[in-house]
Length: 101
Image 1: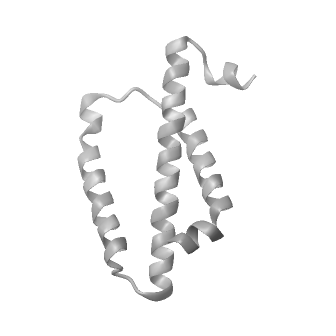
Image 2: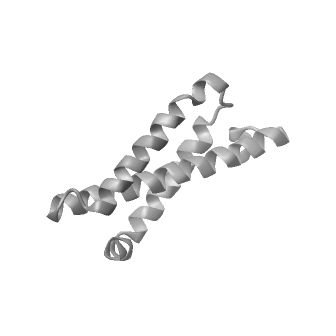
């Protein structure tokens, strides 16, 4: 995993920025019934994390799988950060277009 981080740091930063922009522009106030899927998403995340830690897929396929998981985590974290930024901006009374101008 350290090899991956050293070789694809720029791409990870780009994935995080794309995630932040995506979260910023697509944020909405979550309703209680809309968060039920979150339990299944968290369970799926831990299953995939376990598969990475146990090294279910050997060789090049395993490397690609680790990259997929790493990029997905960085993108989702970027989405969360962008959404939180948008939430704070909306509470202050601004709009996304006004922020960009």
